[in-house]
Amino acid sequence: MEASVALSPILLGISSNRTSYSHSRRHFKKRRALKIVSDFSKIEVKNLSYKPPGTQQSILKDVNLSLREKRFGLIFGRSGSGKTTLLQILAGLAQPTCGSIVVQKYGFDSSPVEPSETLLPERVGIVFQFPERYFLADTVLEEITFGWPRQRADALFREELALNLQYAISSVGLKSISLDEDPRALSGGYKRRLALAVQLVQMPDLLLLDEPLAGLDWKARADVVNLLKNIKKDLTILVVSHDLKELAPLVDKSWKMELGGVLKEAPVPL
Image 1 (cartoon, one colour):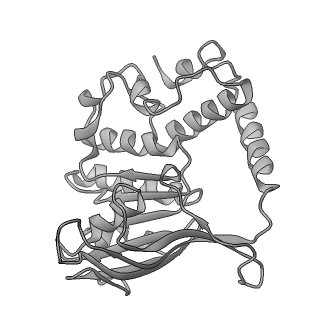
Image 2: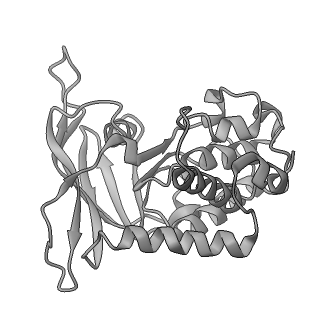
């Protein structure tokens, strides 16, 4: 089953016509935009510390981080410094000992326009290092839609899910493969594309990537970098990586994690 077939009206109950797709995406953006009376928003981490239960050693100490929407942030530093732990906390997989993670909206004068809102875990997508190890489904389509609600949904919600599916498949370049393919049979590069699609279909407020280029050959690495360049036009992305040279052209803001879990804003060393 190719992507164009998988997204047919019979399967998803909507038109797969490209014009209809573009029009509908604009419709949903306008529908959401009516609720927003701000110029831009930021993901803000404030005074966050983390000490694992039953231990006296803090892994993260008073971390502060701010990343504007549709920007690409990079955290680098030595292995074991707490970078991945921070991503796990941002994704809601661990609870900080103290501190907050919020979305703050700002007006045209860069002043806060509304009280900040807690960044909910369900609004965060995370792609772990070597994400293909965690594939669960038997087909590409089932893997992408694995986390979708199984109850019957109204037509508008079903249409929005279908549009998100089209967006995810198109954004990561999966249109050329069969959606009936076994995810484990894909090449390394396509497995990484699929892992991105699994998160993109949820349209997260924040996309977290842990070593997205790890284990890939040079061609697949270049492909993933190009994909991230396009994805950052729509999403806020925060990456942990040692592959600084390849990702540097995408970076809008960067931080160095020191041993002991101290995060400091710093330029990417090249």
